[in-house]
Image 1 (cartoon, rainbow, N blue to C red):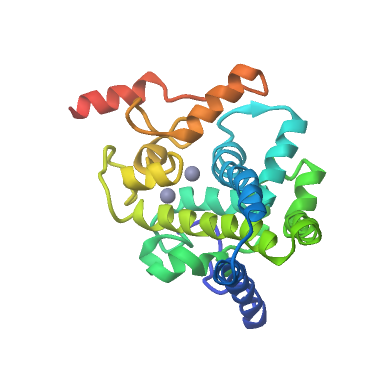
Image 2 (cartoon, protein in one colour; image 1 turned 90 degrees about the horizontal axis):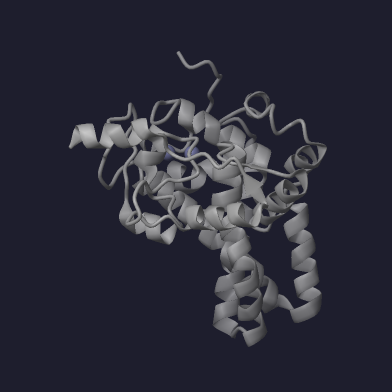
Length: 281
Ligand SMILES: [Zn+2]
Ligand SMILES: [Zn+2]
């Protein structure tokens, strides 16, 4: 029996409707902007914010906050949290849910496993997290020590809304829709693609107790997150692609940040991981 109380419906129908509406609006805004015509300013803003959203979700939320695969200063940690917040993410909420995903992968207690159905895996689990707040907090005690992260957990939409207001004042509706929302939509679907395809399609290098796979297409699209079977075998590594040809753009950025001294104690796969590969032949 899992040591958590899992429930597929831990929020009220009203909250569920509100969250579905929010997700729908975030999709409709960029679609509308593309139909009525975007300005070049919108794409400049997109080019500025999208990399922060991508790295905020992959490097910050996944490899740093959820798996603590490197160490950094409190100031840079705060910057990483803000990057995540540009795509409506929050370190405590994501990490709690993600650590439970690793603990219960592809069982009934894994809220975004494809075994729960494609819709639930891709979108539904964003609306109904499947884990009670106490479970999330119990699994993120290391992050709950920081008041700024607790604040962001309680007000995770505030930074993105402030950015949206500033963009609206500066460039108008289409700047918000393309500059901010289009990137957020891409993050929703990249995460959905990893959760779904990297547990259903691809190859399995390691015989893990779950259905995780390595999927090269998702790895390219999601900056290295597609080496998911490698990742489930050795989750605390900052490096998901084990070899140079396993494209892992997030790891390359981590190496760059390590060189600048902004981050340190980067965790890499130990020799036994490579030995397991060669033993397998
Ligand atoms: Zn997984
Ligand atoms: Zn993970």
